[in-house]
Length: 336
Image (cartoon, rainbow, N blue to C red):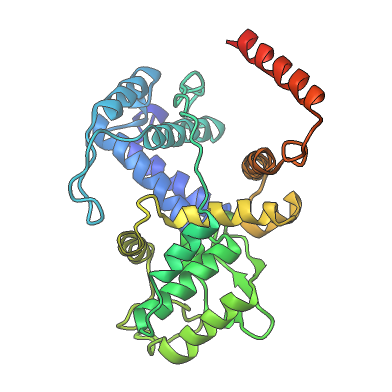
């Protein structure tokens, strides 16, 4: 069979199997599979590697830019088209696939070497303020199963920066309530790591596990910490639904699972934590994202200094104050 006539679906299965063998998480492999299946659906049922061209990739990119969002259980009335991040993600998956095909001899050249997923808009995510964090927790103050589980989930996220998949993947045998150490098994690259949590988070976990956690519906080794009320493992979809309900209860529309991770990282740096330790806690393979958190923490320090500058609060001699203010006004006018 000529390489160009290989069905796109067959080559995709080989590619996904390679990613699994390289240690990529099941969630990442599924995401790549969904992205490539979407391209195959755009091309047609009989798509082969001959259809993987720069022209087709560009047409697919234009198609994504015009496509409206689909309704989901969490968003039944979506507005607008796909986000730039979704379009960028699918283009990146396509380019990565083409590069793999070339390296493994399916293609004689990397046909998408000149294909660019497009620039992403700068997105500054504002972390939750201490007042907003208290507002979130105040919405779960009842002595009920739902609130006990919600407090344990939110405090764990705020205290550890876990991803949604990592939180759902926490197991009872990986939770040491005596030492405050949590073994994270799931994550990007499938790498395990240990994360510590504080005393208040431990107390919330202890209350949930020993007072409210139901009997598992599927008892087995490696039981998940967080379960539904029926005893089934909490999935990412269920977690997102819980946070969506919490968003309405606390009155913070921008609340998401990832915002807790973002808030943890910035709060950790503000409290004096170092970048390399934060990188290990978050499970990042590079410092790129951690440096972004560092920038946000620095911006907050600058803003606080402007509000509490010792010199600004100092009563200067009138002559010095008059000269300083005059030069400051001249500088501002020159910058206009």
